[in-house]
Image 1 (cartoon, rainbow over the protein chains, first blue to last red):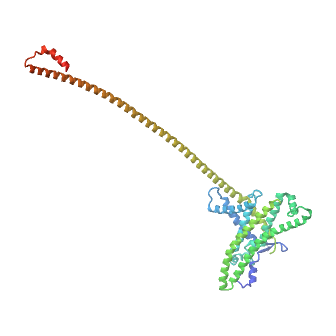
Image 2 (cartoon, each protein chain N blue to C red):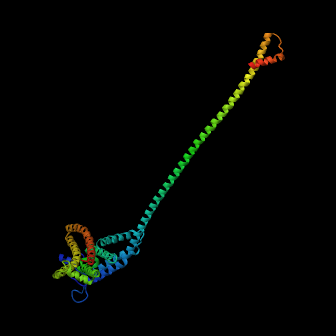
Image 3 (tube, rainbow over the protein chains, first blue to last red):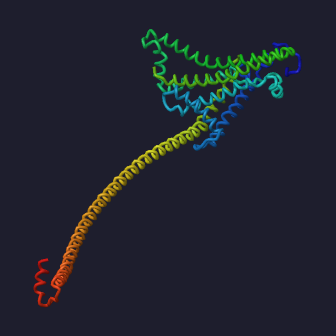
Length: 269
Length: 156
């Protein structure tokens, strides 16, 4: 236990699930989780910066291994975008946006692998009371991404169909353009527009938060004695290996949903 | 799970990262990849062209070889014909030469025969004269009897 003093299990978990927060103004809303923000920015700079660094030296000739790796990654994302998005030039926005989402979310999810108590030794220097290093286990981060995608979705809906077309679609699909059906259509579309960002963000948040929590529970067990340490470590190893799958899978799902939602926005009904 | 200002901060960061990727990461790499694809495609096309050229030239070479072969066999057959002809000619001329030699030899033989006959006649005449001399046991005037002798000689 990093704090070096006796904590009850509730206190231990609560300690690790407390954000480094800074009050910017009055009211609960004007709080900034600077831990999520700082780690997210750092990881984005590392990930996207790495891509940029490789791309800047990219050659159209024989690529070195570094470039080949980035090209594999880009080719993987591009293939997904190519398979789903058929409404224009995917290279203008959708594919690079999907790449950003995948790299960034993957890196943020991967922070779950770092052992919380060891990292806490360092982060206690920044904030004695809580510094969470998994930005995607912060609902603000996943909502920020999902709502950005949601806004893009509405923007592309209007851009592809015109404002009139979009409003028409709100009221006349999916049941039909009969005047009596308008309320039902509108309700249906509202639910859809509401559920998309919610499911998009909460799926990622829930997975990462649960992963973090299970690690915390296992470490708590590990602190109970020798037997607990052995079993806790073995189980934590198993969970970490399983979590590798979850981390990549959730990043992949988040990217795919981004592409799917933005493609759907381009579709005429 | 409290929504707060972090959401907006993260959204702004997200937008910045997306814009950065859209502007500075994706296009150059895509350009490099597409250029390489074009280079590879060109290379493959060039290889295909080279293969086709090779096939064409191999075909041309085959044709040339076939032409040369037929010309060669033509020349050989002409030569053979010529050889046969020459042998024929040689045979004919040899035969003619042989004929000529044979006739010459025959003529010579006849000459020899007649000469030998002449000589024989002379000797027989002389023998006959000598015999007659012996028979007559006297000198025969050769000169006086020459006419007679000549007549005998002629009869022989």
